[in-house]
Length: 243
Image 1 (spheres, rainbow, N blue to C red):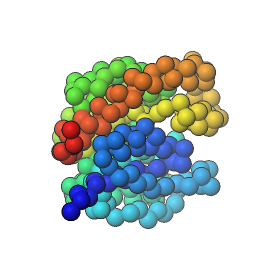
Image 2 (image 1 turned 180 degrees about the horizontal axis):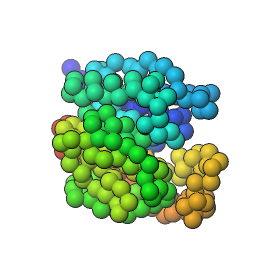
Image 3 (image 1 turned 45 degrees about the horizontal axis):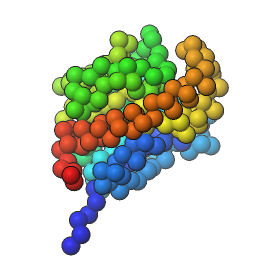
Image 4 (image 1 turned 135 degrees about the vertical axis):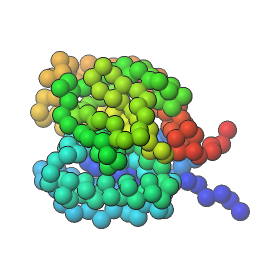
């Protein structure tokens, strides 16, 4: 009898914040990839609202992804963000491994007893991340686009940081990332098209600079994201992988 492939569910909280390279890395590690759109594009200007999420028990890993909205926004916490937090607690209780990315990482911090607030120093662009556990979170340049930062939940262990903010923590079979490992030039191009508030210019950068740097780092990023997913699956989630 053929073995059933494990399944990862990506929660696409905002339609432009897709799984990109992360989806490819999970697929390379033998996972079936599923996605669930939380806020459709027609609700971008008014994202609060009720959402019926999939039951978490049918998945091996759930990955909440990024979004432009803060996890502590009251209207969102009273609607789908609160529901998504309940989903993540239920998933963790059921033994599902969790990997959060940027907004998703902040959501995990908030869900399990940490806090999230505005950072005095936003991070936009490529930043060197210092890692205590490069076997789980490879250090080096990772892409950032965030204005908030977390405090660690009780019992969590920080794995990586920049001078401005914590960048990764683990708590049981849960790992949160502040940076965006999934970013490639195609995804970044979509984000830059949405940069109506001038976040990139405010960071002292321009769109061409970011795209050029992303292209230059593409091969290195591809290697490190595979290592990151392997580290998460083997050392955090506890999955055995094919050689």
